[in-house]
Length: 96
Image (cartoon, rainbow, N blue to C red):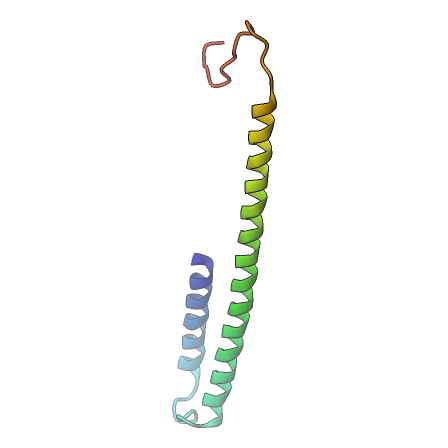
């Protein structure tokens, strides 16, 4: 989501630079220049909406994959039988 805000901010700054370079007299409110800007603005918002939707779907897919993997790991570790008297090994123990 932060990426989308950064992208929108960059696009707004880019649009400000382009409009600052335009002749302020030739682009009056309600003129064709304004309509063109509105169309570009709408197009940008539509594209951002599509990107946001794809990101949300991707995150949901990844969340389900992670949950599935965690369930598999949990089932696997609970099914491992340890013979009585077998020493347990701590993989995080630094004394080797």
